[in-house]
Length: 525
Image (cartoon, rainbow, N blue to C red; front, side, top):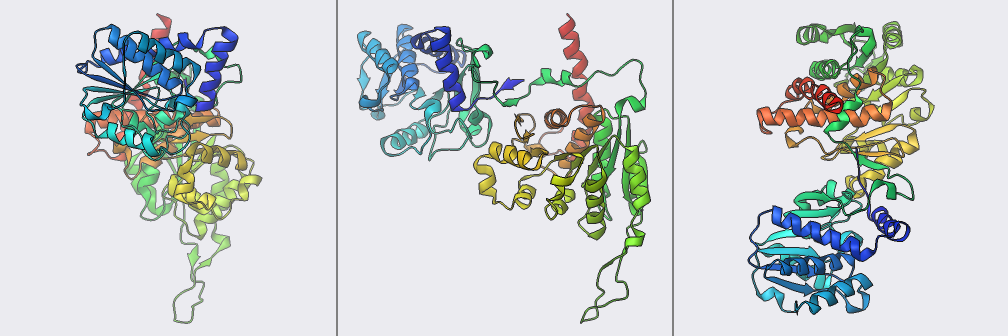
């Protein structure tokens, strides 16, 4: 697990390290500069002519130190100062003076020359408002150059908190960040401006969190070991029973994919509750699944017509599959509802019944979410442990918000929604966010080949499969999102992003889970 910090948290870590541990700020600055120079060398870029652009804050101080170190190594360095003399920090003023003492001149007409490398040390993580005036002019000029661009800590113009672009931002090829990656380096669009991100240690460690452990994090491959290993003495009941209320007339595929993913992610038994018309298709596609069906013809005209002779839909309560539904819910350890489910009267009745009566983990996706948007009050009343997996369009309906409002701060959106309704929310986007109202998981696995029909159905099945193995709701959601993305990455490697379909993702889940044994074996060595 890797913590992701916002600007304020990183500043607190800096100040606590300086004030409570006693490591001077100039020492941290020197370590940061050494790291940048080391990574520039590792990048094997052309060092014939290097420009370091410095601002007034401590990021600029890092830049001055980088310039001095490169100069000491015989690199031809030009230093530009684009900040305000009056607002220069004490440390930055010191680093600038050291440069001048070493004979390094500060250039004022640096835009008239060409460079092979440009180092951006203008703002760092402290930037919180739109770049304007001289700053905007310099950033725009940097982006127009063909030089290899290196950002110190974060590209100037990228919000460290949200990944938003504050007017315009440096388009870096390499970002060297210190101690922890920042949230804005992971979220879009900021991540696209960072290029390759390298995290370097400079002496700010986890025990420096004097003000509480950060709540935002991401997973790495070693976190797959959070999934319990299969027991030598076990049976299908050991790994849980998943009920999937999915599929409708002409939409059997969603149920098939969801059920396959639940099995592939480790559940012992999977049962699909679906209209009778889907029985043969599901049993052919996935004979391992239990199939319980109901009639979907309880919507009829009831003999009534409207003014132009068309039948008026009439819901027949006495034909609702209450007994079959109750039996299936009682059988299950976890239920998923919504993939390919439809949004008709019968689907609505089934969803409201499940929310009213179920008391176990419940994953709601797709059409289940569209139906839920008209019954949000049920989330306050349900006794189920609810997980919602909306994409941006579904979240717009659930919250009556615009796309822009949701994406303005996607972490805040997911966290506040989860807190308000007492659920776990997996808000699906290029970077899926999972939150239980306090903790926030930011997913970094997956690729654009997963932008294909059925991919969300696979995710629902994966989360259900992990829940069936007694994993807590938030953990199953975060790890399910991560596993889903890793399977997508494996599928992309095998098929390419252009040729992937949802089944390819499901087929790779088992291949990814094989890594658990490899991880555990490494721990035992």
